[in-house]
Image 1 (cartoon, rainbow, N blue to C red):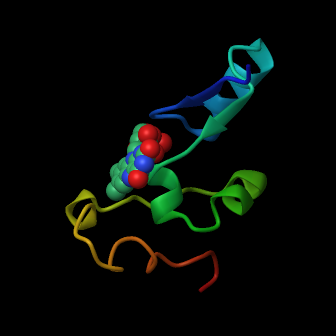
Image 2 (image 1 turned 90 degrees about the horizontal axis):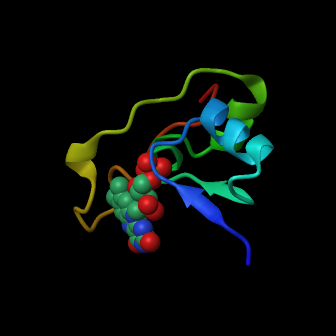
Length: 72
Ligand SMILES: Cc1cc2nc3c(=O)[nH]c(=O)nc-3n(C[C@H](O)[C@H](O)[C@H](O)COP(=O)(O)O)c2cc1C
């Protein structure tokens, strides 16, 4: 059965876990919310945008779909 790890991962830790065979995939939560282009940022090795926890669980679009992509 595939194992998906999650919780406080960054790209480096995710790659280490995958290379060690401790999981089959890594899921990202908060980093993906604040970085809609998270995969591209990982690919380029550029810094991630910080998330704003004050806008979590508010029930609206703010804080979920309004973080900018690179170059925007
Ligand atoms: C605002 C917010 C909403 C979330 N909604 C869900 C959800 O609907 N279902 C779910 O399984 N996990 C949800 N999570 C948990 C994330 O999927 C993830 O397990 C958690 O944020 C830890 O991973 P992270 O350190 O990469 O953020 C949510 C987390 C946050 C911060």
